[in-house]
Image 1: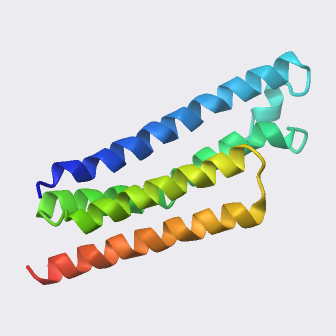
Image 2: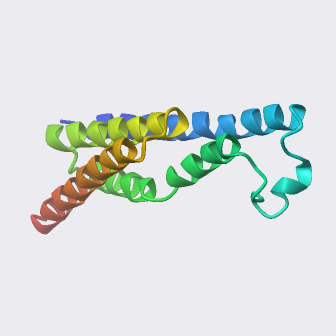
Length: 140
């Protein structure tokens, strides 16, 4: 298998991250137009007066910039070293699916146990990807 297909989950997660990024100004402007926030509420991040529905997209965006960095690194590592296998590709797509599911839960009904389950499953997939990368590199 060529390693190029492993870059598609990377592109998918990066695209999803950009979609979530676009939600931030949308909800902030809508909230400002409703008089729920003022510009100074965002001077040092978000003040306690910012409604939760305005804070959640920003928090979700930050989530998409934390552990997914390790996903990007492991996928690039596997791509560059020729370690992209059908198994790695399937696990990479699984990771992306669970990250998107985590975001959808967070940005919609936000049930913590459902969100935690999606987050935990994505982390398990990420660990497996790193194990696969370690095994591939150890085989030289």
